[in-house]
Length: 450
Image (cartoon, rainbow, N blue to C red; front, side, top):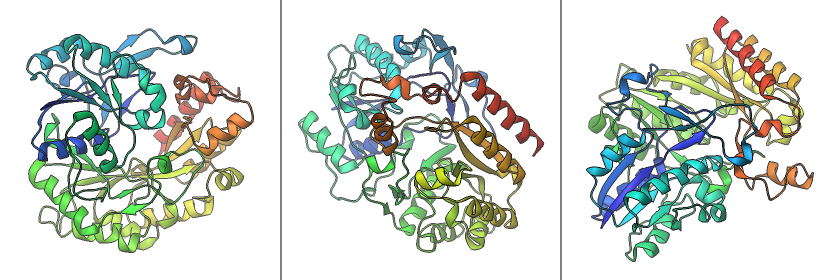
């Protein structure tokens, strides 16, 4: 059979490519390829298309903005005073790609944030005009968190839920009428994502584990993976070496939710192995590593900090979220302010520059006030590291959502569009678009001083 894989358009107030890859979709693609299926791939978000590449700038590590076009806001959020965009390639460029695509038997489309669902409908409607009789199968994050809502989208014929590859394959087997299930129950199944489908492989992503042993009130990690499982270090090193040999990769971002847990048996042997790869041995400069998901600072002792530096980690992003001790405890207890300070000291002692260390600070958390966010900004600046403000986004079925429903602040009728990190912090009235902008401007001002 011919299978068309789709990374869809995104509709949002803002979007930035921080090593964004359709990781799950490409892992399914690798398995389908092994089973003998004919694959085609269209990346509606492709920033490297030759006809737009010159207008899209990359930073030093392959990240950057997407091509975009302003569109009317959906009805539930029409009064939000910010422009709304569709991100990705213009329709005419997608049409050109479709002309060279074999007629598919099925279309597999991935999904991201729950509040990106308008982009899925745009994409599905567009595809139905080109392939009116071809079933569209939707999977991914939104399809898992809000499967019933996903089934209501125009143009979607099937919804596949879950992050476990064997479970996803069982669902696809039922839809295809053919068995495509892997021969192992392991989450990695010995299959690397089919990155050869991408138009640019200079930056890729990797997972060394599934899940997280922590259970933060705002995080959905355990909704996707109930158990925390780590891969063998040797297997991870072999995958990295494969990417170096076959794709010429320059930057690798770790997608793990808990990369540093069991460091002596996991990440440290991985880093030791990476330094033995001929491409990187004795240079530490063959590849740049990044941690966009944020690291648990509790595990960053002096030894681990040195290992991260030796292995050429170029962007170290730390999870901090809030400076308030009570909120640190109530949201999961994964970090204290003293632990955070010690981790930063260890990283700097290992040779990391101020600008290479960044911390996520959350704005708009439930019951949070502006003073707390400002205090967090000033605390991070005193440590002379980069401040990355992230506005709070509500994840369905988390402890935070249950709490807010019990308090009557939200109800079951809340449209997923309101889970958007641009507007959910406005619900309680403690923040406004202008106050959040002032906090961003303040953090930016302080960052420029570092």
